[in-house]
Length: 134
Image (cartoon, rainbow, N blue to C red; front, side, top):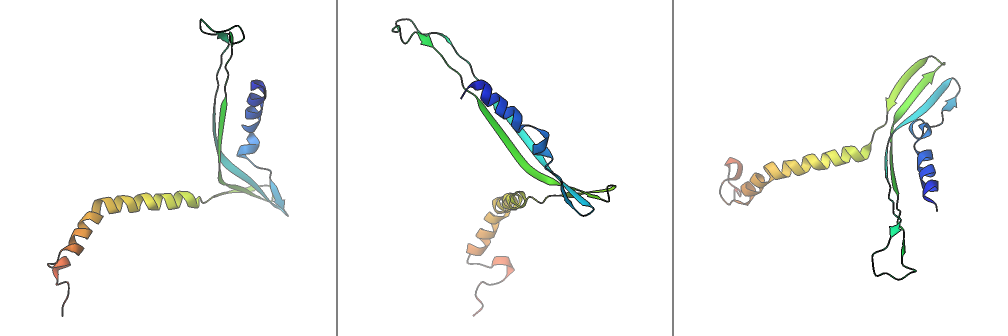
């Protein structure tokens, strides 16, 4: 595959259809999905003489390289009723909610967990009372 073909394909992937999907119409209600799109790319180059002492067939040095990345996340949907009233309904990203809960739990365990473990493991009076009241 030629480098120019890769660049053309990458350029085609960064378009408005990635941000706003095809509208969905049901009666007098139209839904227009929207998304967050991030992307980036890299390139490369080459061509030049090989190092001294190389054989004749090795004397034609070349290079090249390219990379493209694309990240698309749903943002929500625009709801159009009767062609006039527009309402925004955002998408819920459950993965971000779970990740946030995990981070908070980790911070909680790092700050308070050590003290709780010490109190549970001491034989004396944890939390102000005897451990076993037999």
